[in-house]
Image (cartoon, rainbow, N blue to C red):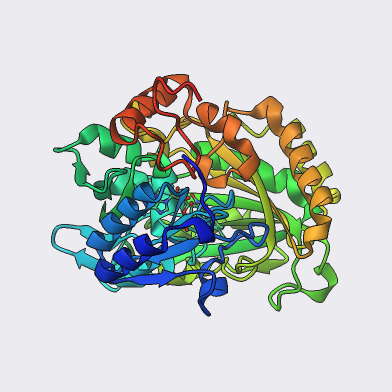
Length: 469
Ligand code: FAD
């Protein structure tokens, strides 16, 4: 499949499309083009030939057929947060789902129906208004679609599973422009693939999630400690992964203290470790007592608060436009030597806005059978996500080098692969290990069934089985 540039897209094809397409069509000569082509990661600066923003499912079908008939490279975008830059392209077509924002909560059936353009910051208030939630992203500007299709790690994961574990039904527009429903009853293998296999099989237009009761106020937030205490704090984090209740999902963040008003000025710019998370259970006092056993923190933001407030706590510092390079790995454990490697790299961290995040898995993440979803590495107790973030594109080399160096240093504790949603553009070769060979083959078979020409290739790509490429 070739990549065509603006001048070579048939003008008559665009004219014909305009007659039926009810959404927005944006081309390089249009005034809104620069805004429309932006994605979250400022390191990704691409110029598609045409951006189609469907108003409804029939428009999605028309966009797919247009891409196929015009022989264009196609990128699919919902929230635009792909760190790897998969949701845009140079010279091709972007199908931008941001115009499809429907949300319908069914409290009696404990379900929510969500269209693909919805962001977590739009969905969480709708479900929590009815005392319900599904595991969602840590930053509210993240799209429900890409997040869920890759797996979906969030603060409720140990209690309620990943977002993809709660995906009950999906409506999909295939590479042929045909609408297919996937659920446990129909096309169950496709549902299996959509639960972690990413955007490989078609464009999901609607997601149906199982939702769970969530308290009006949940004990959540973060406590900050000086980095000198990191071995002890991370030791606690490790023990709590193994022995803590599944209602508690904790993350640990290592970074330089930001100049935030809740942190004393004396620590601004100094290395700190934070424990962050949610306890969605009834024994809050006992959790607080355990945290208190660590002694006084530099700052304590761990309080009962609305779930939606916790879901926006990390928004600051994660605004779009910064340069980003991420690398992640599932870990089999966090022994003292691993902590030492983390601390050495914290000491040499190359940017005040970069951080190292560790997240507890286990609980309901591990309770789902490894073969039940495409999402893999369920038995890993932890994941490390190394997030380099900086302002000037000319400095990229040293920030990328720092990220790679830490990732290399963590390899002795690798559980065997990475999480596609946290992978960068240069990691295409790691897609098979992020699923494991058995699962990758199963995904390749599904890809062959639903997208034999690899029309949807701008993603953490699974090649159709038998494809010599
Ligand atoms: P997009 O860039 O729009 O899409 C990414 C890819 O998903 C596309 O290239 C396409 O292949 C596929 N896709 C998107 N929409 C569709 C669709 N409707 N149908 C079919 N395929 C589609 N991940 C976590 O697990 N937990 C987190 O807490 C978390 N926090 C994050 C915070 C930030 C600030 C960022 C940048 C990322 C975070 N991520 C997190 C990673 C995130 O899950 C992925 O980047 C995910 O792809 C984002 O989804 P999106 O819809 O915003 O992205």
